[in-house]
Length: 286
Ligand code: DGL
Image 1 (cartoon, rainbow, N blue to C red):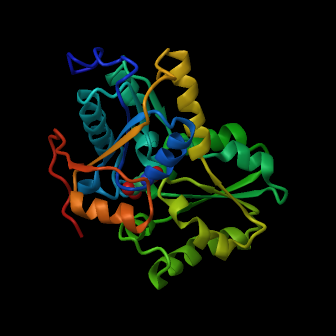
Image 2 (tube, rainbow, N blue to C red):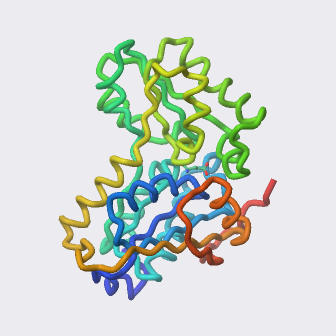
């Protein structure tokens, strides 16, 4: 059940769409949403005090995700996009149970379109360790792989490189070579980007994989699903709405999120500080 007495009161169409992720990865989903819904108000929460989520156990991720969702709901979010594969895999069902009045849209690794596309009948999936360990990926692979071989490659360390803005660095390229080369050696002609941070490394991954390998990002499909859910729930923004807005909040340092957004040329917006109500201490920063 929803712990917040106010959580059913903000479903007016002028309330924002909330998104959350461990950091800047979910902005790759936000970008697609802004394209489809230019008049929307977006509120993006980056839980950078606890980034990365990838090495964390599922139970801890559920606690964190519930706190992120509660924070967004308190600020009026009328729909929440879990713009993080790791949190979606661990917590999506739990979030829907806890906050039944709010529609949630989560990330699903695009295994189905990858299987439809592959000619070599080998598909690679790049994701965080928690996503690889979770049931969600196993379910989509069981459901959609058919006779296609799906190779799941955990990518520890990549999210940290992206958060540091270290895209074209020897460190990032070395990790990418380590993770992508085995997929190519096994004959993969299609690679699923199973973490919302990874599209920020798309040119680097494409350079290693070669132009013939298709890289699949779920963000456009997830943005499309948001539009569908808004229509089904009669939550769509009025067409006469003024230009959209975007506000960021971070549990980390607002000044450094501002710099990350500028450096990676991500959609601009003011950045606020956020504090989550959590029973646990944030992990020490490495
Ligand atoms: N963007 C998150 C995802 O899609 C990254 C998780 C992390 O912080 O490790 O999985």
